[in-house]
Image 1 (cartoon, protein in one colour):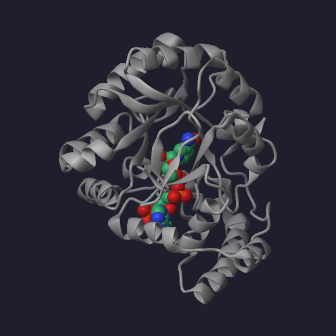
Image 2 (cartoon, rainbow, N blue to C red):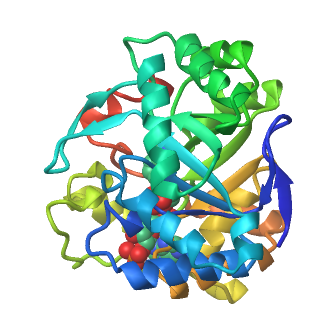
Image 3 (cartoon, rainbow, N blue to C red):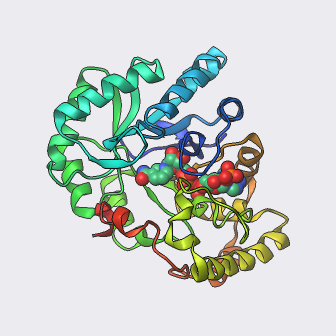
Length: 334
Ligand SMILES: NC(=O)c1ccc[n+]([C@@H]2O[C@H](COP(=O)([O-])OP(=O)(O)OC[C@H]3O[C@@H](n4cnc5c(N)ncnc54)[C@H](OP(=O)(O)O)[C@@H]3O)[C@@H](O)[C@H]2O)c1
C-alpha cells in the first residue's frame, strides 16, 4: 500500500482511507458482520486510516470500529489510525438538533469517544462543522489541550472555508481538512485547495463517488428508505438524477476502454489531483472495498484526464451536494 503524509504536521497514512459512516447510518440497511469483515479486509490490505464521527448512528459507528479493532490481529490493530468528527447533536430518533463545539463540549465528546472506541488516544480529532456560536480558536484550542494531555494526536477540520482554515492553523498545527471532493463536487479548487496547500494542510476527500451516484452501481429505479441521505439529496431527485446519470454513462465508456470500472475512474481521478489528497472510500462491503482498492492500480495519463474532463466538465452536475438546511451549515460554501 502506498502511503502519504497527511499535511506537513500530520501522520503518514495509506493513500486510500476507509470511511465507516455508511456502516451505521445514511445509506439504508446495514450489516454488522459484513461491516466488521470489511474493516478487517481493509486493514489486511494495508489501509491505515479509518474515518468516523461520534454522531454516526449516535455512537454506533465508534462501537463498531472498536469491536473491529479488538477482533483484528494485533499488528493490524496497531497500524490503524482513527479519525473522529464531533459536534453533531442528535435526539434519540436520530434527528439532528444542532452543533456544539464549545471547549467543554469538545472534551466531553472526546471522553465518550475514547470509551466507545476502546482506545487511549484519538489519532485525528475534528469538529464536523463550524459552530457559529464559538470562535474556531476556542474549539481548536480545546483540541490542542487534548493533544498536550495525550488524548489526541492530531487536529483536523471539516467543511470549513478559507478564513476559518487560516484562523485554525494560526492557533495550532492542523493535519488535514476533510471535505467533499469528486469529479462532480469541485468547489474546493477555487480557493480552499490553494489555501490548504499554502499552509501545508492535507485533504481527506469524502463523497468521491458522490454517495454512490457516480459509482456505476446506482440505478434509476433504486428504492430508498426515508432515512437514506439520498432520498432528500438534490442530486438524486427527478430530472437532476436523470441528468447526472448521463454523466456516469459518459464515464462508463472511458472506463470500458481502459478495462476498469466507473468507481475506479472516479477514485483514481481524485488521487490524480495531488499527493496531498487522500480519498475516504465509503465501502460497506468487501466486494466494494476490493473494487475501490483497485483504483490504486489505475494510472490516468494526459489523454485519459482530458477524456474525463470532457465527459464530466467542472460544474456539470445538477443539484447541490446537500439539501438547503444542511448547506446552511457549510462554512466552506459561504
Ligand atoms: N466530513 C464530512 O462532512 C463527511 C460527510 C460525509 C462523509 N464523510 C466521511 O467520508 C466517508 C466516505 O463518504 P461517502 O460514504 O459519502 O462516500 P462515497 O464513497 O462517495 O459513497 C459511498 C456510497 O457509494 C456506494 N458505492 C458504490 N460503489 C462503491 C465502491 N466501489 N466503493 C465504495 N462505495 C461504493 C456505496 O454503496 P453501497 O450502498 O452498495 O454500500 C455507498 O452507498 C464516510 O464514510 C465518512 O467517514 C465525511
